[in-house]
Length: 399
Image 1 (cartoon, rainbow, N blue to C red):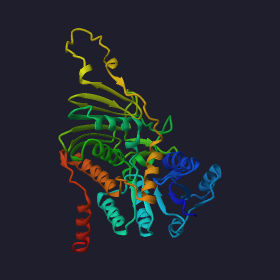
Image 2: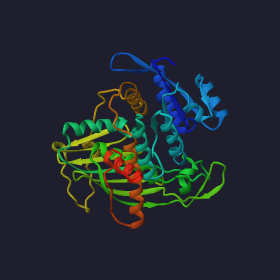
Image 3: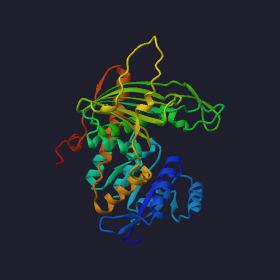
């Protein structure tokens, strides 16, 4: 490949997320537009290598999209200098092992989350990447949603004044699989296979809260398996052993309180599948994937509690939609472009494996809180944490 092309190993691309968001809507979309624009005015093109266990599926995907490169041999791909980036969309249980091999091969790393099944393993991956000097990034897709990007602008503008609290609602009804097929793979509901809504969603809440409002300092969580039996892809009944709903309160640095409900056992009665309400001294906002409605202090109504008289006030009319002043692209694609610039010209990219480790830690602390029934502290995870971790493993100070 020429210097103007970057080769990307895409492992697990036959899965729904890897295929739809990362291959079709990101890498192939970047390829179609002529690559990624760099700061010097040149462009770098992308070339994917599809990797998976089923050669028939890979061949079908390659033919469908006119791609030349696919293989079931990950080690051979990692040994080939044509491919500079390793991208991972595998199931959680298989991810850490593959990432270790890619780091050892000197590839730049771009991965879905959670980055590992345990914090110890996630931290070790971050340490290995730092020691190897490989650039690395973790998908933080929700920060790139149009709604949250509008929210970021509101925060930066001072719209809220002092932010007081954040309330989040995420989820929908995932069918049990008997009379209607489930919308999520069955492994999501088996703890032994890495399933569970805490390990799936708390890594998201970790970066959303950290990069918008403040680092999570403590968590109080309740995890529940609401549906004890489900039906898998082959029509077989199985016992659901992983949590399918979680209710949590997070204390953030700076004094903000966040509470987020995550559930695959709730029926949607909101505008979008995820919504956050942010309340501040000078204004509030309700934000989803795309929409962002605000109510400033000067336009806040004066409700009066009177349970004896029907309230005819239209509270929804008191909120105002933030206008679309920019055309937001697919969030996954936007982050891919930032990561490619990071690899090619060292552009800033804060969402690394250390950030991914903080997400896994928050999931672990959430599960600890559920087991103990108490609020649990979440210690900071920084580069110093990496060095302390390395020192504890080597018996000395690696610095």
